[in-house]
Length: 96
Image (cartoon, rainbow, N blue to C red; front, side, top):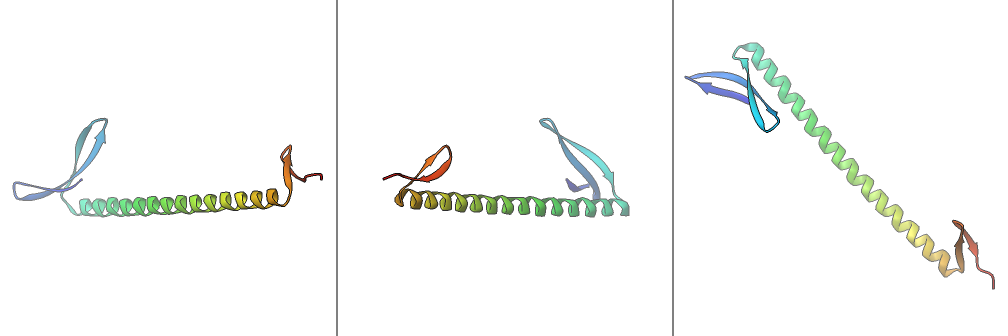
């Protein structure tokens, strides 16, 4: 997508993928076209920022989940070492 020079003049084309083909749409060459171009560029920057934020949040979630799993494993190990076992999902002290 962007400005293309044809016969010494600049024209703005918006390119869109439709299935496996790319189709060009002529948008113009006047001041409104510059405004449209800047709006599209700003929207793309916002979408990229959003994708980056989502990626970072997923990474944080994965780190929290890994930490949670590690804490659970550690707690289970401590309980087992202190003579507890699970019975129907509950921790109980083993009888002597």
